Image (cartoon, rainbow, N blue to C red):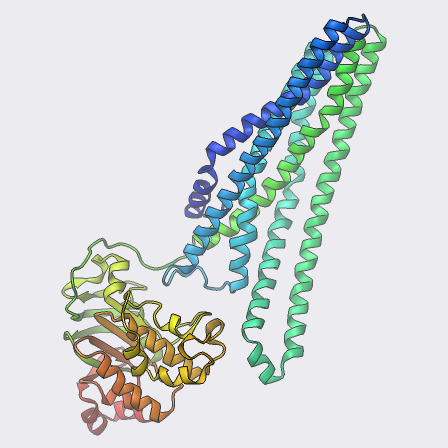
Length: 562
């Protein structure tokens, strides 16, 4: 039901994991459909055995049997539908968790090229549609049993009528599957448009302050109106396809039932069947549209589920972080070593960061800086050479264990909706005091501007804060995590000079005895380091204290002072 092998496996497990409820629901649904088919037969027997030839005792007996059958079909429907609905909701819930887990995976990559609203649509509506497959399967199996039961009972009453149903029902099912194909394609297009509209809406809401500041409200409204219109049109096309499929199936079903009734009437007139058999045949003819219509509905639901499953599979199968590595390291001393590291624009980087060292790295090419950070965070494995932590290649370490020892705090780290304190302590050890980290990053000044101080809410992605304030909160969060090795990328680009100087001293003080790497071109931060490494042209070209490099190295001087 998906487009990717890995995604299909996850979807299949989520749906098949509710097999027990599906089986129970199908059995109870089958009991309900069988009871429904038996009702007209029992009424025909009552007519033959207690009405045509009046017999009070027989009438009472058959009425009791009819009441028992009614009770059976009633409870079968009630508990069967409950089991099917539970299977659908449980499968949808499991898929929602799988999608959210995949999206929230560190450097998972599922969000690449997909706006937040689109991912929300996949995790909600698409998951619901795929989960509904279990309910459709439950009702579909019960409907097949109903059609078969009706055909068997008709065969007992009349072989021609039974054969007519046995041949006609599969033909109707095949037509239903064929007619559902356009619905599948249009359903997928509908979901794509709806997801895009949700993504645009989420982006506009997130940037509403910027839009107002630029006086671009009218352009934003026009953009959303166009996107929403496209989504509405896709929805209408999908609804038309569903209506056409349903209407054609009802027409075909009605024609089929009319044919059954016509053949049955001719058999009665010819004397081949009696009055009771006529009543049973008419009742069964009226019963059969129900399960056949359910089968048509199942075809439509299957088409929608397949379209949504393909979208979920795309998210689940998105290329993500590197995997592999099972070693669980002991307490880290904080030694970081790069040996012959080569990847993209980097060539033969050899570097040893001693335990507890405060190191600065200046990279003249921003693309090379991004590559270095990706290798250190193990978002990719280098083409050549390796990165070692305490003498162990990071490729041998379990990803979670690596992140518990080495934290790469990137320049564009995101904040979340919550209090200032919640954002700072998100990755902090339990019971740790966040105040030193907040003081080091000058977040105490940010708290002073918020109603409620550290308990004040900062909005989605820190929308109530300025760019410099968001940087300080993100830096405080990285410091509060208290990892043995911390790599920070340009943490003060939006901070004024006086605050930057305070932060430089604060980071040094807060990270005393801990290995710290600052990938930056800030003179204030570099001046507080033990030494600085210059990477120019993808290789290390200089290594010395900041003051010496400023004095003696023109490329370094240009990189940090201009």
